[in-house]
Image (cartoon, rainbow, N blue to C red; front, top):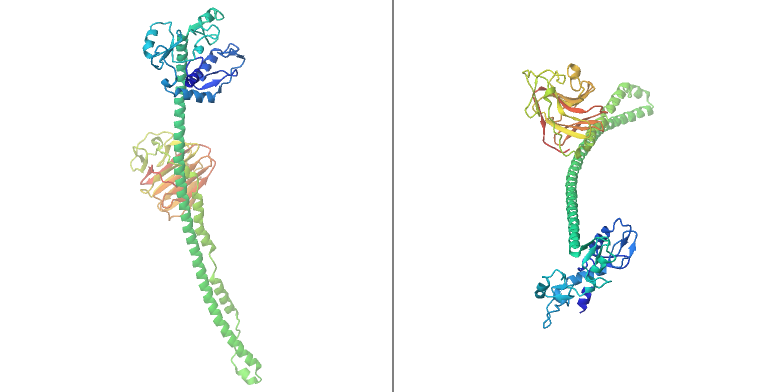
Length: 520
């Protein structure tokens, strides 16, 4: 019976089932959270909220506090098998049979067999088996709760509907329950949709986190490789510079040692002569002194000049040569820049409408070749007079780079220019105006050119593949030779006032824009 009594205390007075997520009002009564929420929703706008059981009123919507103890008890009761609830069929008197339903009209618990008779009459309201029949009856009239007052959100009996609820809108319990279930199903559908949307956002964020982790791992690997290469270059440079210093030091030391040896011999010779002269000076015989050959001026000017020339000829450490070798350090440091963070080369296509008539553009618009045949393109204000062409894409912000294969040409010019560059006359040549910057090769002479100012570069660097890097906001345009290791050639610094196009000029052979990526 203890189980039966416990079962009576865990039924919600609204849905008449075991509590689901029970919450407590200020008055102390407990309800399923969904049930009381729906009741309170119906009371919105009435200016007052009332408890469905005691009618306790409050002006503000009650705060629903979860009853954790009751929640645990309800879960425990829900897990008890039906035959253990202690509710048995009232008509099976000879042998107890677990109740299948409870008839509120008859106030009897029924097994499956006896339920069949009660189901035939609509007056017999069947519910889940319960011994708490008082909750199924009106607390005032002790009659079965058959109706639901929508205005007061309360279950009422027939006498209530004719009494205090006479002017209220009432519904049959089954009808009201179905409406509420429909509302709950709609709420459930909305919650399900929101949960799915939330799950999609979670999955999207998880993917973003994974992508970010992969990107970070890639950048970490690139930066690690960069610094590993820098350390190798610095170690190689250190070895070369230290070797040069040691070589110069040894050469100077050998020269100085040789000169010291010569001077030691000279010093011994002078010491002997000095001793002989001292002997002559100490002689008392004038004849012997006078018959001795004249020694002459042992410290004449010619001997001193020869000695000075020898000293100066020894030289010193060639700091200039050492500094020249250290210039590579500047190239290494300059090569450490933001381009490591540029993941992919920018796709460059050549704009045929700008190409001169003696330059051929391939079908994929990535190769420019010197042509000895006039292409007879229509004359437009965009077209260059000389063998030049610019890209379709223009850059007005951000960091970008593009690469090209120049191995099949010994005379070319690559760089970037403003769209307002002249298209005819010598002032239209890339590099020979203040609207373009370029790297130039003329046979084996390499230079960088801007505004007709030419700076010659070393000729001992492989120039088969080139890279041009642009940092528009920083005002930097850098040129690299993609040898092993990558060599920084030159960086132009300017304040860019217009968008920039990639530009190239071919006097012999061809240049191909490369789509391969090689990290700095």
